[in-house]
Image (cartoon, rainbow, N blue to C red; front, side, top):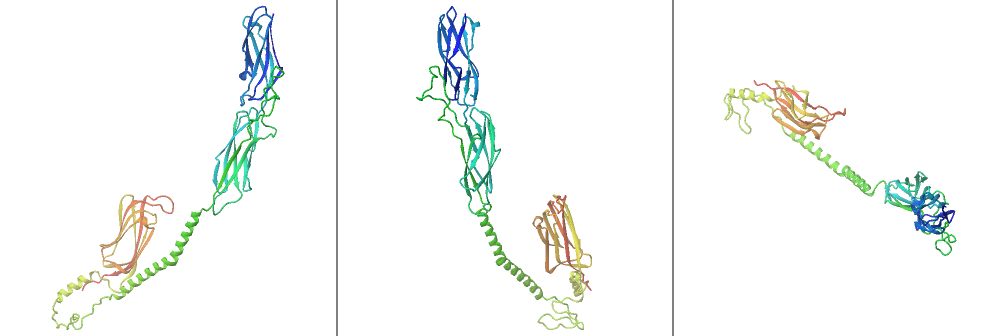
Amino acid sequence: MTTSAELGLPALTVAPGGVATTTLTVRNDLDIVEAYALEVVGDCAAWTTVEPARVSLFPGTSETVTIRLAPPRSPAARAGEFPLGVRVLPTERPELVTVPETTVTVTPFHELQAALAPRRRRGWLRGRYRTSVRNLGNAPTTVVPTPGQPGEDLRFRVSPERLRLEPGESGEMRLQARARKLIWFGKQATWPFEVTVAPADPAAGPDGVGKDGDGKDGDGGGKGGSAPAVDPTAAQNPKLDGEFLQVPVFPKWLLALLAALIALLLAWFALVRPAVRSSAKQAAEKAVAQQNATPTPIAAAPVDGAQPAPSGGAPAAAGKPAAGQPGAGQASAGAGSRGQGLAVPGTGQQSSATIEVQTASGSASTGNYQVPRGKVFDITDIVVANFQGDQGVLTITAGKQTITTIALETFRNQDYHWVTPIQVPADQAVTANVTCESPGTPASGKQASTCHELLNVSGTLSDIRQGN
């Protein structure tokens, strides 16, 4: 006594997304009524069903059930040959279980999903893109991207040239589009192109579900089956649209700016600079003329003790002072006080002195040059050196007179010249007062720790005319 079961076909072929059927005949050779549970086992169990899944048979009877195979059109249904088994398990006599088997061939199909990122690039000469591809088929495939452009304006390079992908696997390739020449001036150019992503094997095409002559699923002569055929819903090879925007090296606004700068330079050299030089020359000539027009008073010695007559008046009587004139003692005293700060003509010698001031950050320091006793210093030139580029304030005084106050950060070297000298009497000083805000950086490239200024004072050093 036993249980027998037999599949209708020894082998089956099914396409993903399609349906194939076969039959299973179960016979009860026992002497009792038996119920049988039918269960699909093997690699095809996920997408194979038995209808009905349970049968009850009287002794000596049999029943035929339908086995339905419907693999999904996805990488989960791998292409190839797989065993299909149906376990027939008796309820009363489970030790009499049987598992009839057949071979199922799943046909391959090829489907690719691709994307180009970014779709548009801007550049002078080339643009770089990324092409991502996913294998949605059920068989391994080697992908080859083929870029194309209507003209011959672009050249392409793909890395890697081929990409092998397993079912469900994704990969990425780099694409470079390069223009043949630069655009130096003018408008930008737009170069559209297309990338076709296809399997490397030209025979690798879409596969589909087999159909019989009337367009319905065949039943294999009453026992089920299917045959490979062309799938009208098969996906075509993806085509990706891209664009390269080639921009000029020199934009229009830069050309306009250069033209404006050239016009300004021409206007400066042709109009402004001559006018500035002419005004400076006229100011210098006017200052020299004013200096020459001012006579130097010369005291004439009296003749025979006679006093000099006032302007427009008669000479005063001998031995008597004129009205409003001081007496002899008074005249002597007045002459002594007037000659205290005047230089003796012919005694002047060219002289110069250097004042060096070093000041810590956030503090003030003073350097000076003191005129020797019995001398008078006529300043004609002052040269100031801020060689470190310090920041702060410099004040220059000559005696009790402030010559200038200047911000250090506005100059590195500054000079002053006078046609009419600045006179500094004896025992007074030329002073340089520096308030340091921030030390600068000298030519060595290392920031200094203190502010450091040099002041060179040049002029004539003469003897003072002493009183009688």
